[in-house]
Length: 219
Image (tube, rainbow, N blue to C red; front, side, top):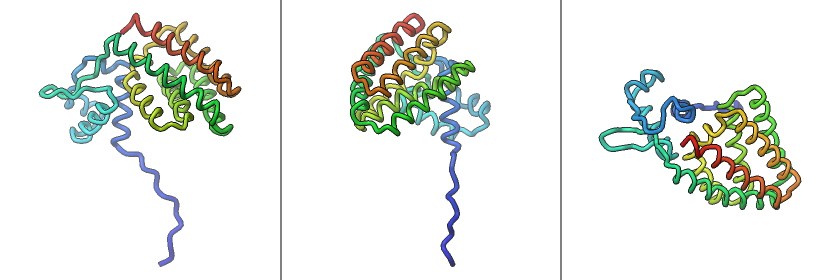
């Protein structure tokens, strides 16, 4: 039999769909911090059985969004103000180092990719699509960490960023806060395109410090 030359089938699994849906519920606050997750009710609402639901909850626990408590099941993790401040302090150090390394070693094509993410994000800002805007916003931060070329830095950054998903999202609740954050992102991409290490580290530091100011009153 001759070898087939068909393209492989793209697979998008139930697990990925479930993880994404529940993650969005947490980010948007429909599953609030400290809330116990009732598997029966959530499974019924999502139209899935308990087995795939539990696998999804285990994955979200590995991201730091859920605590699996013996005898209680899944509980949406609630961060203290000190937890948030500590993680943002570490993100400042990681992103500044990543920014410097990216300015030195990233290819022009890699930087163009980050610019494309930024441009798509700005269109979502214009249409006030907060959730999808937020996802691209976080993808930009992750992309800069990846451009460092340091896998350990990027994985550490991703672990912390995952735990702050809900906190970072609510930081843009107020229109003025959102507008300020967008302006900081404009400065960020322009500094990266110039490969200006000092300007990029300054804006990354300011951006994350302002994030703390924006979220502190609502934690």
